[in-house]
Length: 363
Image (tube, rainbow, N blue to C red; front, side):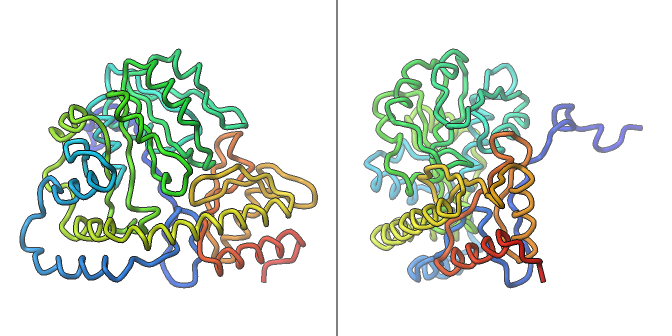
């Protein structure tokens, strides 16, 4: 008799699941590994969530219509161009199901967000990768030559924070028959967006999240911006009531706090700049980031490389500081990805790095 696992589809049996960043239990951790905001949600957001809790016996708005309308108004679009999901991962999954999967050519630039291969595999397809070189400039010619049905492109890139020029995204969109997905999870920290392309090319969609700049990772709210035709297709396969009442209420309240969030974003960008200078002063190689993190190669005793990065990663973890380490690719194995946290957290990080650099033993 077959085991339960053997009864699943073969492509599901072979699936390698997405591995999220560590979420430790207990107190005393400094979390610089999952690009969360160092700021607590504003009181207006907390009040909106609390008020909505009285209605938990009722289903939420099935299409998140008030939130779609508010996002459209904020971004100069119409509601029919907006789709809301249970985090941007939900929206990306819908895209893979609708436009990728079996029989479709799905591509990504690489290294990139490691969820893309997983959602492609769930949809029954295989993702192909076009590698970056060490500059992490967009491999534009190769992407155009690939002629994808569906292309996932994170901009600013993860894990480096490098933003691709709008002119290159425009050229790529114009050359494609398929759908270009510009994943803008970190766009609020960047100097430009792909949003203008929506009025120029109907094969471009932009995905965004409330998890990073809005500091609402625990609510799981993301959204897609695109043509009404693309949104309508995705709406057909979207789960009913895919965003709960509390999440819709919190996100809606957050949109109305733009002045406060712009102050917070500016503070993170300033801290990012100062932190990059501090790491460069230690001899580290740092990519020019337009996200809320830095991707940098540690140096110790004049040496860099995977062993050095792994050693520091372990040293920090022993000191209850979490960063992200990607050891499986030559372009990432010598680097650490470090979220921009609070000023106190960044100071503590630098203090521990200097302890490690000086070769002091863990206590």
